[in-house]
Length: 154
Length: 154
Length: 154
Length: 154
Image (cartoon, rainbow over all chains, first blue to last red; front, side, top):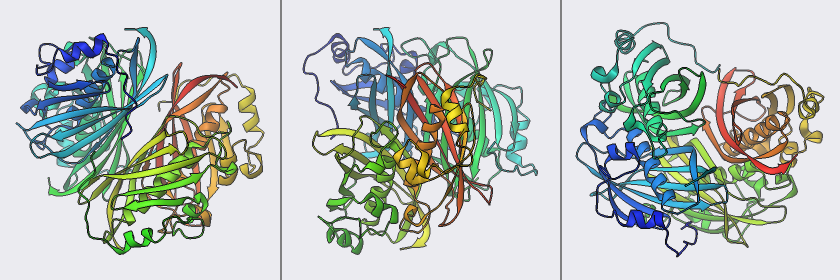
């Protein structure tokens, strides 16, 4: 377990996501692409977040399995939300995203994105997102990203 | 320049994409997510392909710039098409995808994805995709991927 | 925790490493570069391994801190040993290695490499290695790799 | 070709490396691990550098081929030298390193590391290193890295 010690104090970003537990991001996300992904928030705490998605027809690749690009999109969006829920004063921007693909999913499958902050540095935050098949308890994909603090306040 | 020597012989996969030059993938792509991305094919040859996309409102992140996840999605989809146009007997599946982000784009901007095959091994193909701002001639992002041959014939 | 269910049965590869616990790889490793790294094996079990290293003068970069390339070398070597200890019939070769750097170490510091198998597929094994500062209990670096089964038996 | 427009003006860092062309880093590198790698500088210009290495016995893995960790080490060291030769006022530190492995080399083989700056941002520099087999003109490996400017002047 590499998660840093959580800050026990709450913050507006965390409270915002707590108020959305059990709801769909379809109408509520501040991320337009997040609304298209249309996940349902299952859980959130400092540095961790779980969102469930259903694999829709327009999320498939030519082999009719879950598109690797949509998986990458879920990771980037879910990690962005996790960073926002940390309640930092500044915005962070993605430097890179690395995704490993392990197993396919098909139309109608439900998948769960589980994020974690791996290292919270002064300038760089490193975060991870796993994608699990909801019913089979199988790890489908895992990604990591480095985000850099920028000189713009939230 | 690390591109392998191209196979001069054409193949049905390459001919298929050649017939689509100048057209939108919105209605024609065999990739459902590729139809959502709705790029226009600009050029294709053995191991290379160029597709232009317009940044639509639903492709934005909370900061109202081009979503990193959509950029990753474009890369995965464009590289998949490039592999298909190689005319291989077997399907290839993504082992990983690595994306570096350099500069933002905004709603309405046109971006061009340019793919290249870096190494064509017997079991693994390594490919790259650059995303350029169409008007500013600025490199926005670059990604690489390893794809593995699977025991399913095209 | 994404570790696959361990195979409870032992195997010659695992027994070999168990016999080396507490010893230095300086004279014993089958990996010539592993002998140069000269780690001491702290623990081994199915899919996990811990090795301690001392940062020697020749392992530094121009800024006189632990060279990122040596860190990558430790990861690659420690993950290779972890795979060997799985007792697979075939050899596996690295497809890629991804390393994130978080914090520096200096000459004389002791660091511990901790490996884990993230996904054990039929053709691809995905593994991770964390590098911890031994005394400060600080995560210095983390890497992941995909290894592919090759048609050569052990 | 994604190389940024080079700054035609020379600088002390670039002049330093120019003075070393044709010489071995074995005794001259400011990088202690670079001295162990013992490459010979073939060429240097703004944003590019070529170094030749010989695969020594202690650079091998258990399969008696060129150790992937040493390859990663060469990339990190050669890219670091390329950044130094840019003549920046500040130091840059590696955020990450990503390496793709394509083909093996064996003891005694000569390999050439060729670096390139892919994107020179204000805070982040993205750079690449290819490793070529010197005689076979075969691409063995390719890596990319993001380096971040730090608040320490050269």
